[in-house]
Length: 382
Image (cartoon, rainbow, N blue to C red; front, side):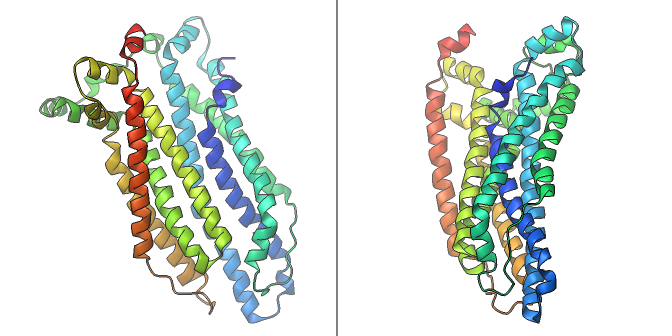
């Protein structure tokens, strides 16, 4: 088998994102199914308003949060497959030269779906561990009859088994698509893309200093990594700010859960993006050091272009959490009298921004030290 379990074990980012998505969606959807069972027992008008608000909350949370994380997991899976094929071009080219078909090679990529299974299974099991406390908080004021926790096989199928099959099938299909290249092209060390670049753009790039030109090209060559940087900043911004508001709007448990999930998603995605950028540019960094460029210039060329993207992600996350909470308060719970008025919390946003800048710059410093430790001799020997 060309791609084995050992290769799939490196897709921890997908497992973590799948775990978070399934954890949230399983709790809310299971609660939705169980609360529907007691609908006939509701007698008061206030309880019925609260019931409909809870049902609407489930739909909003699952569609917005679950859908966002599902999209990210799919993008990350496609990125991993493309990265694996790009880093194993010669081996794949040799196999094709020996007579292996694209489909036969692509079939071995089904193991990438195991990462989705690990994440969804952990998230599903974790949801049932938290569910008793979650149900108690959802009906803390006893406006609804007692809600029992029931097992729903359809949730297990749609949130664990089906994603595993779909991710495995997607891995095989995408790998088959990416392998549809001539054997000689796979055997080359670098793809010849210069001919596709418009002449006027080449002339424009020549006017830029080398470090600035390299920074732009690094940013453009890995568009998926730009998405991951923005998503990491988005998660940190949205979840940290939203967690502070949960104390008044929902419960401290929901606030802590959102904060933990947001930080896990942010650090996981950011770690994947930065390590991939550095590992994919080790030869470039080595050559820059040979020609006398300083460590600061190397960091600016390789990592500097992603800093504006991180701030864009933070702004998007701020707008997202504000819009989502206003949607919940003004629309979902509009008929419920005890819901407090939600206003944009500027102090919380500023605290979150300061924490984000501090953590991001510390990470950039740590990775700049890793760049400093890259051995020029080892790179040249390769």
